[in-house]
Length: 56
Image (cartoon, rainbow, N blue to C red; front, side, top):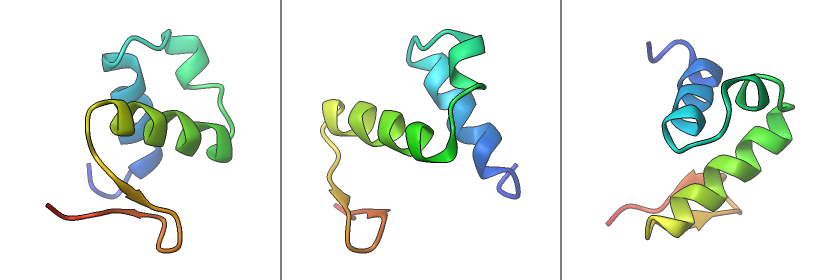
């Protein structure tokens, strides 16, 4: 599955309560925004300069 990051992101959104049709119709920029917002709400920190989650 690691070869399908878009699918993983969409399934993460669906698991987080985003309707299936919405999650799979988002552009890549919208999908990134949703994933970052949900991750931030869960207590994670996102490094925008690296476009990656911070460790720890």
